[in-house]
Length: 280
Ligand code: SAM
Image (cartoon, rainbow, N blue to C red):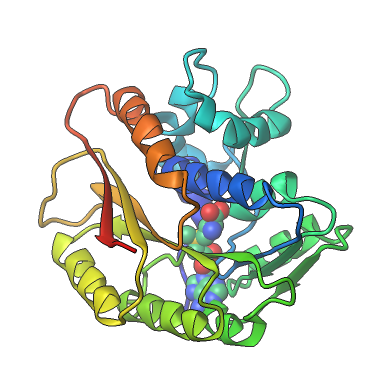
């Protein structure tokens, strides 16, 4: 049974990192005048009320999006992501946080396609409602890993596959690697962006070893930590693994991450990383 609800965590430091990377990849794909598919395997509810009971209970967004959205010294690379945050918060109050599907919805063009899957019985209808009038979108209550097999390669032969499981099942750490392998077999030129939490560092090291063993090349790792690793429960850092990243992404993240680190983790306990796990 799925118990994870993203509404408790929306807009936290991990979302800021994930959605910055997502927006930059989408903007790069838009540089060519050819449509692409955005496939979101673990889509969530789409929109989160930050003054709602869930977000207020954890207050995680206060140490995430709330710290950066009105700063005037934001690096230019944050502009696409911030344009979406501002679209959903037109006055001075930070009320809504757009999840990955709504970020994609705002940034994609008329001919691009969005395909999203979500299994949670409460979040799926919320997501479906968000996209009722969007003819570019398909929203299914299906297993995201299965959809990788079903939807790839896209007709357009261009695409971003965002994989963002909650890791509430231990099998997710292996399933994401299998999912990427299945996707890559069908669509080797696609861009795959996988989010991961650092709860136990060993789990991430193992996942990276398994990914390396697939033989896939061009694997970039991007990480933002807020506290040193530790062996107790709780996320201390999060990251994105990007396969076939747009050529500019490494440099863009090298510009953005120091600013994010300084702004999100003023205590100085954090770290940042941009590194090729497997190069060209
Ligand atoms: N990507 C969203 C965002 O950035 O706004 C957040 C997604 S949340 C971290 C993970 C979601 O995956 C949860 O809503 C959960 O219900 C859903 N989920 C878990 N297992 C799934 C599966 N096998 N297929 C599709 N969705 C799944």
